[in-house]
Amino acid sequence: MNRVRDNLLARANNIIERLESPQIPYGYVLFTFFFAVTLRNFLETYIDGEIASADLPADLIHYYLSYTCLAMALTVLFHFATKVPVARISRVILPSFLILILPPVTWMLVPAWRNFSIGYMFPDTHQDLPLRFLTFFGPVTNSGVMPGMRVEIALAVGASFLYFLAKGRNLWQGLWFSFLTYTVIFIYCALPFAYVTSMHALGLGDEITLPAMTNSLLFLILFLGFWQFYLYNKTYFTEIFKDIRPLRLLHFEFMFFLGVVLSQATHPYPLPPDSSGFFHGIFLTAATGFAWLFAVTTNNIVDYDIDAISNPRRPTVTGVIPARDYKYFPWLFFALAVIYSGAVNLISLFLILVFMGNYFLYSTPPLRLKRLTFFSKLLISLNSLVLVLLGQLFHSGNFALPLGVIFFFLVCVTATLNFIDIKDYEGDKKAGIRTLPVVLGLETSKKMIGVFFVISYITAGLVFSNSLPLLIMAGGAGVAQFFLLNRKPYREDHVLLVHLLSLAVLIFLLR
Image (cartoon, rainbow, N blue to C red; front, side):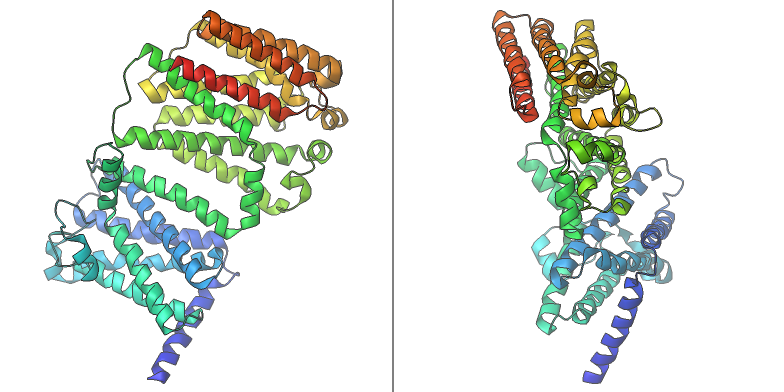
């Protein structure tokens, strides 16, 4: 018996070591997973007769997301079970998804199994969920976890048991973590139950549709992605999010909510109480954050010399994240911004692309328009306007801004945004970037930008409300900004806090 066990573990270790080999490019691992899933999708859609269906694109997106979500969940579980780095675990788990072809293959090979269709377990057809959990999915019905899937799952759980033993877990630990592996797979197969329960609790309805389930998967992937990134490299995770510049990011998130309340003024009806509005709001908020991180990381790469003087704690300057790794982050955040905005609709994707494109033109060669004195901030004020439009689109499906609001953003916001160059004065001066503080001198530019703030705040009161109390508050906030800009020592975060508080008050009054 011991000899059989030792032989099994020796073979398992041999396979695991081959899969974990760093000599295999990680891109090959990702493509292996992608093409294994693609093969499964081809076989399943062919069997179901959906391969020529008009709904095939939506179905395929859902299938790819579902297997990605499962792979990420299993990677996190295996990390906590073995303490092996997630990068090494994923090298084993992702190629192992070739086992997905087993259910459609057995469906074709075993005539008795052709009466069953592959799918999730649903509340209206698969009752007694706890009993099904305890009895390995319970009795077979016409649809759901068909016999071939049960063979696939049994093999996956058995393989996980060998993996845990190979990584030094004892027998009881191996059994426990294998049970948790089965639990994760069971929850995956019963996702419609989780969806119905959570949406009902939030009062958003509980109708199960393909778009609703796809949105649920995107939400889970977002959560698992942050978790997996943290487990992958805690230092990288911490450094990226320490450098996120939350007050500036909040400005853009507030612009989105400003667009929502402005839309409410012209379309005074509530958002439909369904799950799409809930998920789309989260996706657009996340897409804005990812688009901002794209701007931050690209700017850090090209502004190394400036940051070495003005912002020595940036990860590109400290070298905490090596340049060979840091260069990939902008494109990761770009891809995530595209995915989560595109999950809402194509117009949202287009607006997020405009946002990222404007920052790229502003920061990055060959144009690097930030070198243009004063007027370079027009691109950033345009980005604020773009997010207002995005908020309107989210609320009502269209957008229409009064000319006064457009004038305020393109003129007043452009003028006040020159304050972001005050902190970088020394670095910009040495690098030859002709910002307003470099051209006019630091003290003169502070006074001028302070006047811009006073004028802009009063203009905002006139454009957005034209009520006397709001005008008084706006004027007072503008004067406060003037003094904060000219106070010594200068603190940019204090200026941003007053700005965000002013925005919060405006949004509250307009809602």
